[in-house]
Amino acid sequence: MRNLAKRVLAATAFVALTVSAFAMPPVPRKSPELAITDPSGKQILLSSYRGKIVVMPFMFTTCPHCQHEAQMLTKLQHEFAARGVVMLGIVFNEPNAALTAQFVKDYNIGFPVGYATRDTVTSYLGLSVMDRWVVPQVAVIDRKGNVVAQSEATGTPDLQEETYMRNYIEKLLKDGGPSSSATPAAKGKTVAKSGAAPKKD
Image 1: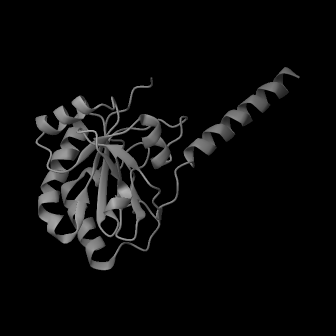
Image 2: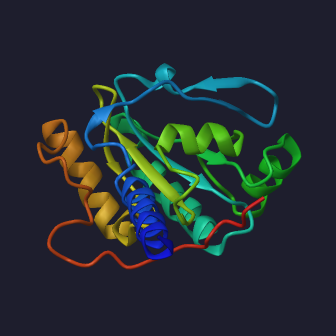
């Protein structure tokens, strides 16, 4: 009887882990609305950028990978702004105006950055509380309002690499987005872990 109970418990744990592992929402998919708050207290709606390509890094201000991502995307923002591309940053380790403003100033970020709660971010990205996930998480929205790329929970190095992101944005500008449902990094190569693992509250 005790062995049966152990087998049932093990099977339950396996199912829970399997559900967690496949809980990430499909890509591409229609982007839900997302509201963030800028340092001045103004609400920014993702839907206000409809018709543009939007690259959204979800960041911790204390994460070196996030700091690098923000600086890299600032460079790409300067290159692509005139062509209808917007970078929109979201801070969520300590969602408050002062921390967000200081982050923008310290790293000379050249695109809008707002803050949101952790629950808002994990809900938007479809991250499970069971998942071990890292930051930055990055989502890319095409001109039709579809999420066409998103970091894996454990990180997608391609979405943190300048040359890859430049080429990917060029592709979206040229043809409106990829027809594949695969995350960009999942092209026959192993996705390495990257970024910093968030601390659990």
